[in-house]
Length: 147
Image 1 (cartoon, rainbow, N blue to C red):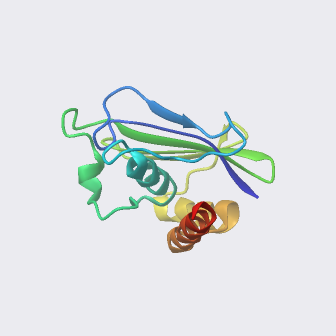
Image 2 (cartoon, rainbow, N blue to C red):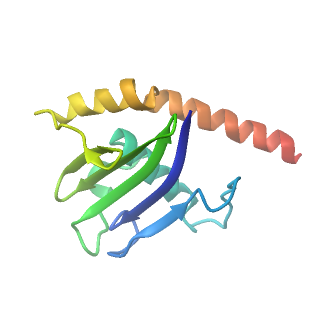
């Protein structure tokens, strides 16, 4: 089972050079609510960029880098799959894509696409489109529970 533990980002979209972190382990259940512009979609953008190298919303990749700092855009996602701990680190300016398994850096292939395939097929066992469909159904179920 895939369990997200933490996600943090800096110089990502409107956030600055200090990490913003969401700790999903703090409570048993997490519900993200807020007013327009408070950063709910930024969490989804960070999650999908970190895992799949593309944001949730229709944003060009260069636009993900904070326009004030124009560098050091970084997203880190800590998660576990069947009690095995992973950390995915992805950045822009400079380009970064690292996968750690139990604290040890996974062998980097010469092409990031090969490591992306390993991440999706062997670790997450889900791709970008499947994750979006899953998120859609979670939202539908929550809406029905609340109404």
